[in-house]
Amino acid sequence: MSRAVLVTGSSRGIGAAVAAAFATDGDRVAVHYRSGRAEAKAVLAGLPGDGHTMVQADVADADAVHRMVEEAADALDGIDVLVNNAAVFREHRIGEVDYAAWRAEWQQTLETNLLGPANVVFCALPYLRRSGAGRVVNVSSRGAFRGEPNGPAYAASKAGLNAFGQSMALVLAQYGIAVTTVAPGFVETAMGRLAMRGQRAAEVRAQSPFNRVARVDEIAAAVRYLASPEAEWASGSVLDLNGASYLRT
Image 1: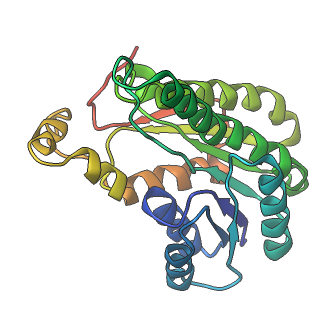
Image 2: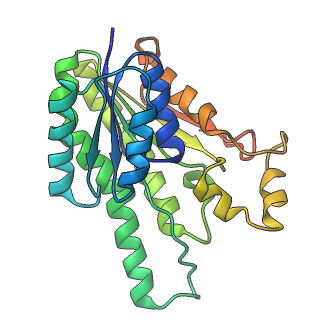
Image 3: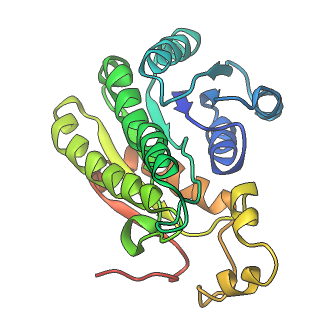
């Protein structure tokens, strides 16, 4: 049966691959973007099947989030699956930025990476409840566990997202909604390539015993499984997708 799927931050990278994976399964997908309208249109045009749509919002803007969710639900006739993927990462190493920049990066990062997903879940809840077997998959990061010295707000926001997902798993199970999280390490995306420039590329690849970074389709496959009817019992879990580059107990 075709499901209605909202994927935030799906104009490129992991989000675009996730959107394509669901569309390949015959689902109807809302491609969300903040500013990359042309990229989102290209993703939308490349999705197999029909019934897809495109929605815009800065997820750091609570009012825009509400409007975006309503537009997606109206176009898709509901929301059965929500993938919270939209996020920002900007370097702000303590001791190397001034106080104004430090505060600005923390505020923007937390509003986008943590408050944004929380607001999207809140606004989508009536539709997820109506589904009877709704799914929420949050995209976190390996940095939530090992830390990010160049972007501490990013690591903190993703750690908060993990806790938020587990809290929602506890409270939303009564509505048949399962909530899970994936925590990738480095992924072969435009953002990932920026962080792997020059000599750093070999260093990053060597973090995994496979001597490579993840492909976007590998992350999308995990998200697709966690959103499936068969994955209800995974609710509350955080799945590491880092090629054994960081092992936690």
